[in-house]
Image (cartoon, rainbow, N blue to C red; front, top):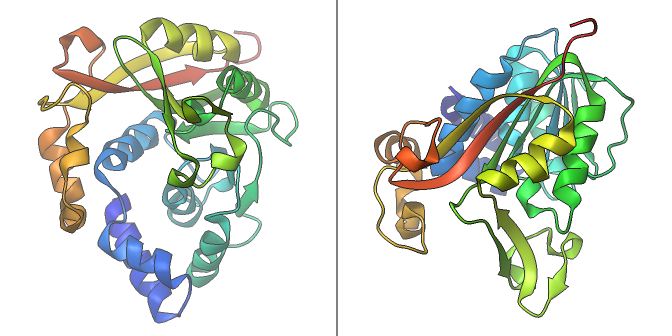
Length: 274
């Protein structure tokens, strides 16, 4: 679904001479190993329709353009930097997506520039774990504020049986300037344990938790590395197949998994009067 859309988008945009680098990326690896599963799970959780007003907080932009283009939803696609936004404005133009239906914009998830109860659906794919300090909790509180009564939110985050913070050097990721530097390097991401999911994400949102599903590899090859870290770059076009073969089916319990590495959280804001 999203894979085919990404390839077609890359080819069409390349023929128009638009966003050449990102167009080539979409042709070769439109959806990588993890995103293949995450995109599908988020799609199934939020069930987008043309009547929805959707907020994407920092996720890979292909899914938000798909929702605006193919589903016909009103989509606000945000990021902490404008790194991808210009390319996706060009893609939207090539596809003929009306500007009033697709809104790529810079916004900080800790302080969203939207009124209360604006969005019927919200999602964030592998984003909130990168916010330093208590920013993840602040972002979830903002999600709870701007989600409309009866609305649904789906987020994915890294998971580990024992939570930990991970650091990288400044040049290793594009949003490093918005992170926090320390003796160990620049804060890159947090891996949440089961307790963290509740105390740092679910409780601060003020929303009802409908589901937590744990994600991971079906085999474990290292104590410190994920299976996808061993993939050769030439395997890029095979990522959807590898995802289907090597990622375990989502589980309600991480303890039942060979190598739990992520979590999907589905939240809902109670309808008025419920």
